[in-house]
Length: 249
Image (tube, rainbow, N blue to C red; front, top):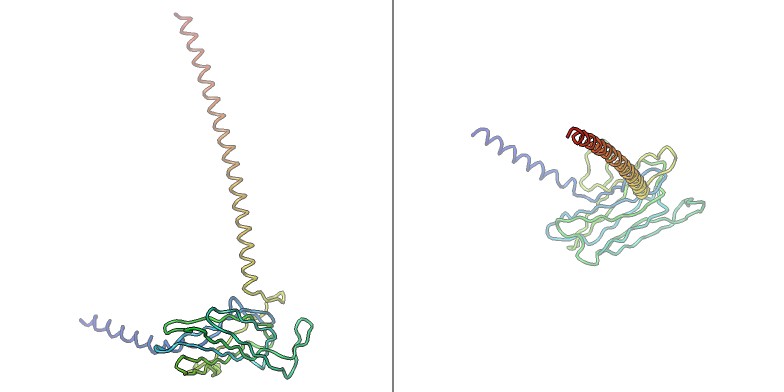
């Protein structure tokens, strides 16, 4: 009886912990596809969960950092959503591929043209960004999430190291160190390398198969040759024995 009571109390405590900790994970976040290396390009996903039981998410506004402006920002089309890219003049022009750029994207807005993100679901919004700054370890993207009931949740609180996570943290993109060759390899490069590895593996497998077939053919020929010799020797022996029997008769 005591054991069952302890188990029941433990189960209730576990449920309570999960219930209390769940909201901490249900916020707008940003993660790269693969790696977001300093000085390179990356595809990042803004992940938006729907936190309401009686309303859908119908709009997402993401503000891009102005302290480290990104010269190239290209959203990927998302079915069921319209996207608007807002650019602003820069106080200090950027250089990109030998050209000076005096404006950069400061906001990207996605608006649902249907039901949006319904309760119990989430949506990813991919964006290609670059070049990533070399003098920063992270980028902060403040976001506004609008629901169908007109409620607006402001994910704009910047997390501070050594402090508890705020109630409405802004999405933060961690930047990795650039590779030793000075180049950043994105998800597309990795896919290309995977395809090349697959092709090489297939070629090696085919070569091994051909070699195996050749070895099998040689072995079969040798076996048949030995069998033929044995059969021939048996025939000769049989002929000698038959001759002797006739001579004795």
